Amino acid sequence: MKLSSAPIFAVSIVAAALLSACSQNPTQEHTAVPIESLKSAVVVQYADIAEAVYEDSLITAMALRDQIQVFLDHPTESNLAKAKEAWIAARVPYQQSEVYRFGNAIVDDWEGKVNAWPLDEGLIDYVDTSAYGEESDVNSLYSANIIANKTLTIGGSTLDASKITPELIAEHLHEADGVEANVASGYHAIEFLLWGQDLNGTNKGAGERPASDYDLQNCSNGHCERRREYLLAATDLLISDLEEMAQNWKHAGAARVALLEQSSDQGLSTILTGMGSLAYGELGGERTKLGLLLHDPEEEHDCFSDNTHYSHYYDAKGIKNAYLGEYTRIDGTLVKGPSLSTLVQQAQPSLDVTMKARLMATEAAAQVMVDQAMQGNTFDVLIGMNNTAGNQVVNNFIDSLVSETRTTEEIIRLLDLQGISLEGSDSLDNPDSVF
Image 1 (cartoon, one colour):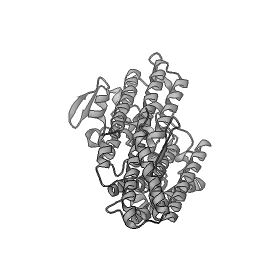
Image 2 (cartoon, helix red, strand yellow; image 1 turned 90 degrees about the vertical axis):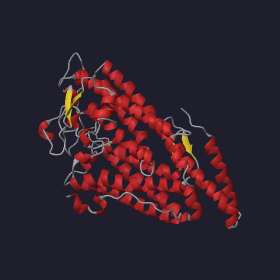
Image 3 (tube, helix red, strand yellow; image 1 turned 45 degrees about the horizontal axis):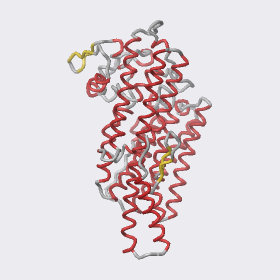
Image 4 (tube, helix red, strand yellow; image 1 turned 120 degrees about the vertical axis):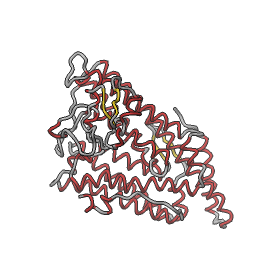
C-alpha cells in the first residue's frame, strides 16, 4: 500500500515559499498567511504519518498471522521461533504509533483493545501457581483459564465459551467483569500465548512455552485445540482492530477528519500533547520509572518476551518522528514533510537545536538499553534490585525523557498554544505514593 504524495508535495511548496519569504525579512502582514499555511501543512503531515504507521502495523500483523498459521500447521520449535520473530517485527511500527494516542480521542479510546497491559494471564491459559498464585481479591477471573474451560461465570451469569472466536474475545472476555487486568485481546495476549510466562524474575531469560502446547499429536499441558483456536482468534481480532484504525487515518477517515477540522493551533496542540504525554507520564513514568522503583519485572511492558527494550526504543522514535515530520516505512520508504521542527526553527532556531539534541539523547539512551539486551541484560534484568549499573542505564533513559518533555513545554510556550495538559505520573511526580 502506498500513500498519496499529493499532500506532501503541496505542503512542501508552502514550506519553500515560507523560507523564501523569510529570507527577504517580510513584514508581519506578509508572513501571517504563509505561517498559517505551514501550520496546517504540519498537521496534515502528522496525519499522513499516522496513515503510514497504522498501515505498516496492519501489514506486519498480517505477516504475523501467516507465520502463526505456518507454526500451527507444523508445530515445531523452529516455527514457533519464527512466529515469535514475526511478533517482535509487528511491534516495530505499532510502537511508533503510540505518540498518536494522547491528544487523539479516537486513538485513545481504541488503544486498550490492542496494547493493554499488564494482564492477569491466568484468565487465558494455564499458569505456574507457585509464582502466579491461585486467586485475587480484586479479580474473580484471575485464574479462570478460558482455554481449559468451555463455560465461565462472569458477573453472576454463565458464558458459553465452547467456541473461541474473535467476537467472544472482544465482546465478552476483554476487560470482563469491568476489570482492566482481564486483557484478553491484543499484542500482549498473543505474546503470552507464544512465549508463556516469564518465570525468571529479574534474572536472564524470557518465557519458555513449548511448541508442543499447540501440537495435536503430542499435546503438552492439555487443551491444545482450544489454545490453537485462541491464538488464531486473538490474531484475527488484532488484524481487524488495526484495519479499523488504518481506515480512520485515510482520506475522510474519522481520526483524520477529527484532527483536520480543528484550527491549525489545535492541531499543533494535539501533536505536542501526544509527544509530551507519552514521553513523560506514560513512557518515562508508568512504563519505566514504576518498574525501576519497585524492581518488579511484572511492570515490564513486554514481560513475556523480554522485548521491552525495543518497545521503549520505538516509542521514543515515534516522538522523534512527530517532531521531525518523518517516518521510515517497513519497506524503507521515507515519509517526510513539513514539521514542528520547521516551525520552531523559524521562530527560535536555538530551541529547535535543543529539541533535536534532546531527542537524539533519548534515542541514544534507549540504544544503550537495546545494546544491553543483546548481551542478555534485558529490561527486567536492568531494573533488578542491587543491579546498580543496570538501574543507572534505565534511569538515564528516564532522565532524557524528562529533559525532552521540559523542552516540549518550552515549544508549547513559544508557539503560544493554550489549554495543553500533559500526562503526569506518580512514579515521577510523587514516588513515595508508589510504595
